[in-house]
Every structure is written in structure tokens, then in C-alpha cells.
Length: 299
Image (tube, rainbow, N blue to C red; front, side, top):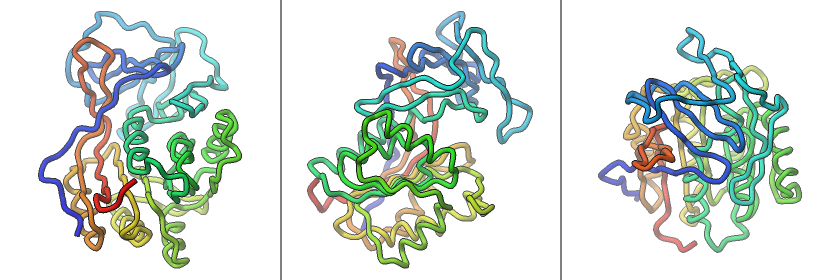
């Protein structure tokens, strides 16, 4: 029976060559993406910025809608078609999207590292990335075996495939699926499929390719139950991240503990965070997470 860890964790990552959190505070953050710097809103940056002035190429100015909206304002030219970045061997295109982010989630870097640790030494693993977006996590997983990448957006899956080509990984064994994540997972259960690892990063609200409605609090329990059915005693991990909701990491850990009660291992939970480049390494929280790892098998 999976054991629930007694205390929460902070899973944090610092910058790398093509990304860094330069400063944060007063509800905003200043980040570098390759040769470009951007200011984006972040309600959890409650403190005072370290730097007196921020120089950037552009800033996302949010609208009045709490759930999103807003526009980019550019102070200097930025390639509208995007520009290439890299994380380890994975190359991908960064771009200023209408959704305030830049086409990938840099705070996921320590998650990609952790998944690699769980699969260390494997080249035949079968993993699945639900809500896979533009595929950086999928390509990171692909060095360990086959990956099933699922996202409801044709545009996102097309960008993920383009990132695979940019990385020289288009021949790796990845199934690119445009589908509603919950429906696909349910079908995989009926097919009797199993996976060595699953990562899921569901939105607060979304629509499937056929207009299916996704509401996190309503539909997450059923999806987690189906994911649990796709894992067995030889599987390695499940990693769940949740953004932008009034929910506790302990709550989603409890959900995993119930669904994965039939499996050995440990369930951990806590905050995902990015460490600033500055001397004090201040941490900016970005999401909550819960993860299961199988302690009873070797990698």
C-alpha cells in the first residue's frame, strides 16, 4: 500500500542557459528566455523586487478577468514566429502566446529531472504525458522508451511535433494524440494498457476537440482513478501538477493515496517553485503537486 509522506516538499529548480527568473515582486516577475527578457504577472510574488528597475523586451498586461485575458506590450522587437531554446538535449520554440506564457513551463524542469531519475537505466519504458502541450516533457521522456503524448489542441500537438523535429527526435517512438485526455485515458483502461509512468498537468478549465468540457474539481478524481488502473506493481511513477486553483497539495495527495492504495511506494506532495538567479535564491511558488514513486523496484 502506497505510503503518504508526513510532510510537504518544495520541488524547486534554478535557471539554466536559456532560462532564468531574474527578479520578482509586487505581483510581477522578470524572466529571461534566451536573448529576450519579459515581465509577466504573478500574484504570488508578494514581496519587494530586489532590483530598482526592470529592463525587458515586453510585458504581459493582464485584463480585468480573473481567469485570464490581457495583452502583450513590447518595448523592443521580438520575433513573432518565436525563437529556439534548449533544455538539455531538447530544443523547442519559445513564443509570446495570448495566454501570457511563452509556449512551455520552465518550472517543470525539476519534474523532468525527477522522472528521468525514476526511469534511470531504462530504454524500454512506456510512459504517457496527458495534457502534453508543446511536448518538452514528452521529448525529455522519449530517451527512456516510448511515449504517448495526448492533448486536445491540434495546434499544441503540431507544435510538439515541430519541437521534436527541431530537436532531431522526430524518429523517436512517440504517439502524438489529439484527443480529450479523460476520454483517452478511459479508453486505454478498456484496452487493458499499462504504463511505467504517467505525468498529467490538467488545466483549471478546458475544452476537448469535440467540445468536451473539463472542470478540474469535477473531473480530476475520475481521471486519476483511470490513471491508477493504467499502473501496476512494476510501474515507476505518476506525477500530477495543478496550477491556478484554490486547492491544497495535501488534497490532491489524498486523491492519489486513495486511487493508488493497491500499489506499493510513496506519495509525496508540496509546492513547485522557481529559484531566482540572485544571490539569495529567493523561491517563487508556481504550482502544487502530488507524485507517486514505486520504491519497490529498481530503475
